[in-house]
Image (tube, rainbow, N blue to C red; front, side, top):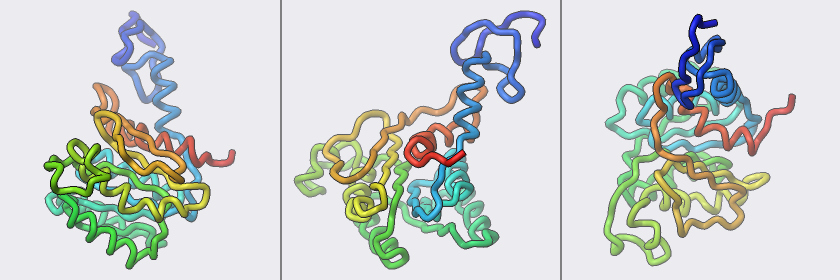
Length: 230
């Protein structure tokens, strides 16, 4: 307990009783973030594809997927040496070989096609979860097929990835689930028969929140979609 009331780092509400982990947050904000941080999902038997492992939050998200039983394929940029090395080390030490690291820059249509062929060769069209954290690319309309034009101007790679893996996601038990990190809505995506598509704001955590909190924000839709039995 603090001697004097202090403002919460997120909502500015005054508080005196400190949380064991979030000491700069009021009880309400601390409880909400702790619940999200420790939430679990049941992903046993599901295959997740995570693109764009370029930051620590994406790395922590991958660890959450593995923790909750998913088989995970991660696509990391050739320039992301630090996280790629960390993931490759985890893949070597994982006892059940549920983590595969794929190196692909995902800069446009060609790279997406290469990833599609690689995923099919490895998993034969099996995919339940697509997490789009790949960097957003810019490109002129003329580069893309007509049905992609509405979205391609702003969200090239995430849009192409959803189209590329739509068939696999639509066949997933209970429907596939897509999470896309983007600053706004993505239109012209093939939503039919994909169980859910969540757009998560591409905003970094503030102040006291760390990379695990940022990963938990991305993970929250999966916790809601695939709850773990208590």
